[in-house]
Image (spheres, rainbow, N blue to C red):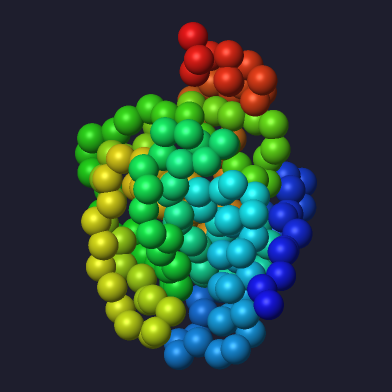
Length: 175
Ligand code: NI
């Protein structure tokens, strides 16, 4: 049975470390980690999760854009597990949008991100893949990819005026 993992929060040094590459083919500790991360992500209404957020400093992330209470307008997409992802290309077109982070509960911020990205990664079967993402899934990817470099969305806001608490965020998006 997969288990619910504890989420590291802002202030823990694991969120500020650069992650290590994962040896492929995957061995059982990483396979268990992926199962547990998927399970955890579904239970906490997240749209993405990176290994440092569960105290593991490895290059592994999941993007799972789907509508939920925290992101009602998210598109419904199958979750993608990316091992050793590499950001190959960012579109010059950007978009401002709200982000939150399971590791920074209660806070939201407006972050400028590339509208589209091209990414290479290894999948769970050990195969190399290339994918192009646009819009919300591209935003989720860029947010999770930042986690692998020890960066958080609060480092990306243009100024602290672009931050809001969850309560005020809901007020803003509903107005
Ligand atoms: Ni995050």
